[in-house]
Image (cartoon, rainbow, N blue to C red; front, top):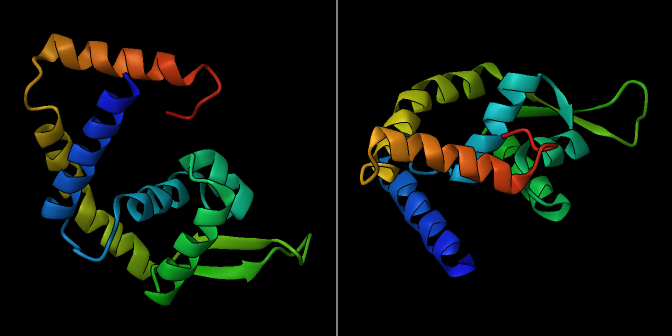
Amino acid sequence: MGHLLRKTYQRHVAIFQQHASDPNLTAVQFVTLCALRDHGPSSQSELVRATAVDQGTIRGIMDRLKARALISLSPDPQDRRKVIAALTAQGAAALNEMVPCAQHITELTLQNLNAGERVALLFLLRKMIGPDSEA
């Protein structure tokens, strides 16, 4: 079963890369931008929880998004050891441009499923990841 999940994910990522409005924006970077839009300015550990990206990887994603001016990074006023990421105006614009593409990408990913199968798949995926997930 793990093999099928991995192949499905690889197919989705390939569709994402082919149809993204920004060819330099990865699926994981898009998810990170969405998390910042949905949750507001966030620490690295908050982004780890919101995106399910591991601690080591999220820092590199944050650095790449900052280099493209899609997010800003600043010290947390309460704990100077923490870094807070926030969506920039440029990041919000990139995200707004990408959302219709993401909807199309989802449609392409699910194109072989009928409406009932889509509902069932989403239900089962959410159930598999557990009740504490932010899916």
